Image (cartoon, rainbow, N blue to C red):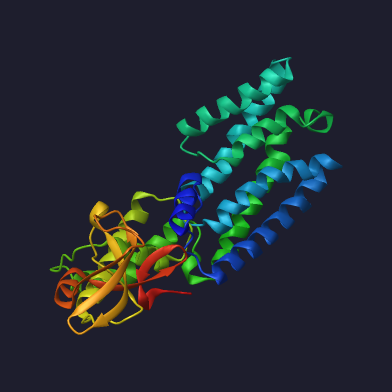
Length: 320
């Protein structure tokens, strides 16, 4: 049953979130401050329910800026450029296409196309384009002023709030380039010291790297580079520690792809060991008790692991 539930979760795409409780709390607080500021600005230029609807697209941006501050879609240019380009296209479609349904569809489609070419792809921009078409008379009366008041002001306020709020926490620098630059400077000595080492990177090491980054990210090439460096550190630590097999603990073979597996030790009797495969796609049968010699198990096992936030990570990095 447990394996069935896990498979269902993978099919429907339940995220394997590795962020800490503090990170989740800070993301929520940042969104609170950012949207409060955007609402105050919108209420100055648009009255009634329309002001709330305008803030709706900013709410989606706030999720990216404060929950995924190092992601490619969260950076200042995608946020500002994406909303501005989409707002311009939305106003144009509203003024030149009589049928509102066609205008809405064209506005969103063109906004996506334009954001791609302007290198400012930002999903909430689609809502900004749509609202320019379907926002009603209070939005129509603004014309192209809608692009500046309140869209531009809202995005500038949101990005500014993101910069100031995230600057309070060393691991949440925004824009993401500042985080990567600080990370590169802090690890330059370590990189030089281990330049001659090329460790084997295991699946658990990448999971460990995600835990250390402590950020829910959409991956960029820079992010992958950071992940590789952090995974390399995890691999070096794993190799330095002697492995002791104990009952009740889980061990991984530190392989990659279909050969990767995690085994839970059920009992050790003399030179025999009984175990159960807890995860992996190897030839082992998940959930079925098996046995082998203790020597063979020691040759197979490479690191001690624990389940943390839906991922198998080295025990010392668990935040459970």
